[in-house]
Image (tube, rainbow, N blue to C red):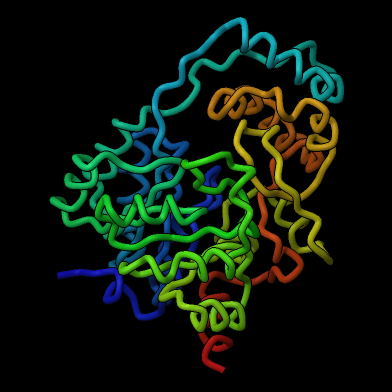
Length: 345
């Protein structure tokens, strides 16, 4: 029987990073190098999830993971949407727009995505933003799929363990992009990764995956010595050859000389860590008034698309963890080799 502990040669998971970063080529390269590649599927249609899983299988016969956001269909208040559009006016002025267009859809249907994931049958499914129902988790186990839950505080970790998760990914505040908080206010989940590990380790009997700001083999050795069995690394893989992020975004990451990241809810309606830029600064005064995810995320989609077209990193969401100054211009296989070598040194 496959378990998390017997899944791969090396206990390194490439983090699922939504928005096109985790190409099938990146996922396969990490798995081929003995780690666990992860396809970020929260923004993908059910058909695309199946197609990309098939693409990955053409590139590797090794295990890989697919990640989803657990979310319900949003209740859309059109008056609130109009108010949210008004909050985006400073950014629209930068683009010369009168307003942002109303999206044709607010998010993908999670139940349909979950059906597609089960059809795709990856070795592992990981989840963030909420916890699965028992019946959903049972369906995954019946399909032979291992389940990883994401937690940013002790209560969340205990809930995932009680529901039957095969492993729990503990996400420290250093983590880039969105974090998985679903119990308590996001602003209250402020523990560093090492603090979170120390708090959760005595209460968990399932394998622990450490995530948040990890960039090299020294980081891997440090968190494994603190009690994690696995590590999940994201930002370091964003600057690999196989990463699908915009070239200008990739260059901003490589050029970073220090931690210039901060958390913002203005791009998506959920706290997420990324490189500071003009968009964050313009929207900072109204950050607490933007609608929750996925409404804000859908509303800013056209802005981010235009920014990518214009190669304007000042209006892109450039998600990144606090270790950004240590990114490398390297292939995924090269990064994996370096991480393994450094962690064993």
